[in-house]
Length: 351
Image 1: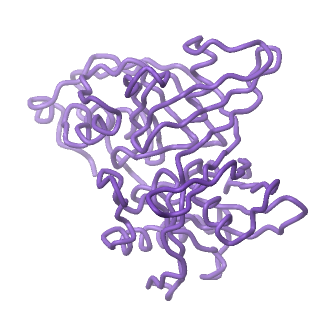
Image 2: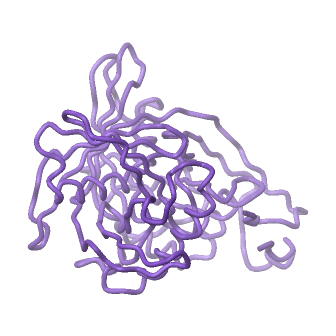
C-alpha cells in the first residue's frame, strides 16, 4: 500500500536527511546494519527496547524507510545496533523486517559477527577464532568468527536454548489438512514437509509455499502453541518452515528448507533461528546422535550446517543448545537520502 503524500506524513514524523548503513548477505539473505540509529531507542535491555520500538512511530518510520521500496524491498532485513544489556556482551541489536521487529535472527547474528571483526569493533587474530557476544531480544547469543590469514572463513552461531512445543498438530489449509510440528529456536516456527501438499522447496513452487505458509502461521498465531512460557514479549508464531528430505548419510541429515516469516517474507538463506528450531525437532526424533550434523540447504542452494552442542533444562522442558555455521559477505555501504519533496516517504511494499 502506498503511503499518503510526504507533506501530510511529514507533519507528524521526523526523519533525518541522510541514513548510513552497511549491508551484508548471509546465504543470500540481506542484512542491513545501522550502526548509529538517528532516532532515540530507549530501554534498559534489548528486549525492552524492542517492545518500546514496536510502539514508537519514529522508530517504526526509520525501519520502514530502510526496508520498504524504493530503498529496500518486500524481503529486506536489517538491524539497529543498540547497547548490550550489560558488559558481558559486545553489542545489542534490534532485528527488523518489512512488518516489524523480530525476536531473533540467526543469519543477522552471523552477519554481525563478520561485521564486528571486519570493522575492528571486536579484535580478532589473523588466524584463529574470536567470540562476538550479542544481546538480542530473545537472549544472549554468540557468533564465533574463524579467520585464516585475516579472512573470515566461517561463523559458528550459538543460539539460545531451543525446544519442541508440539508435534502432529492438525492445521486446515486451502489445499487440505496438514500436520505440523511447532518448535522454538529464538522465535517460534511451525514446520512441515512440503511433500504433504505435493510441493517441493524449489523456486517454481515459492508462490504456493508463501501463500500456504501464511495460512498456517496465522491459523496458529493466536493459539496456546504461540505463547512463550516465560516472556509474553516473545509470543507469536514467527513463520512456517517447509522442508524436503534429501537423504541421510553417515553422520549427516540432509534437508532443504524455505522459511516463510513475518507476513509472507521468504528467507533466501537456510534461516538461522529456523535451523535452531529444526535441530530441536530432529534431536527429539532421535535423528541427531552425537557427532551427527544437519546439512541445511536453502531454496537458492546456500548451506548452513547445524549441530547440537548440549542439552539443558529450560523451565522443566528439555532444550538443546544449537550451533549453526555459515558465513556472511559485505555487499555495500550506503548513505540513503530523504528528499523533502519526495511524496513516497517512508515508502511502500509491492509484491
